View 1 (cartoon, one colour):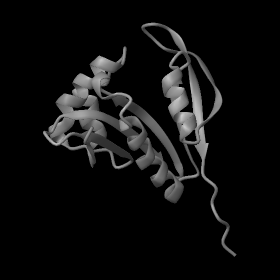
View 2 (cartoon, one colour; view 1 turned 90 degrees about the vertical axis):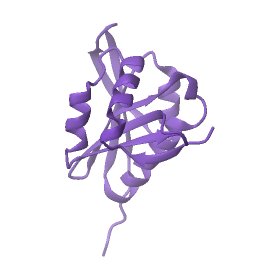
View 3 (tube, rainbow, N blue to C red; view 1 turned 120 degrees about the horizontal axis):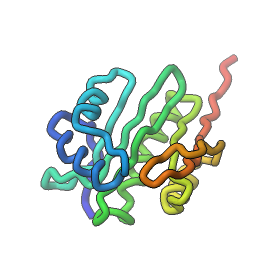
Length: 152
């Protein structure tokens, strides 16, 4: 499956909002996505096929040396083709160069997502009881720390 990772722009917002509705019980709206697009602390990327269709996307907020991955979503028919892994790899490379850590949450029952995050070096750091709604479920907090070389 061919796709390219590109920065999110305004033309992607309606497709991403549709993907949000398909993937999440509490989806981000177009207004929320547009606000994130113009937030200097945010970076959103999309996996786009050769015809302009969005196969997946991910968002990151960075504050000082801390990174928070907001969303990782992949269209159902594009799953298991490395799309989420490619999106995460972009943020992990950024993190290794610029951050002390990256963190994110996943539904406790979302075994495939948790396995993917572990494959990229994330480890369970805690639980957020009742974090998700529709249905109510705990969130697993996962974090990847980046070792910084000391300068002398």
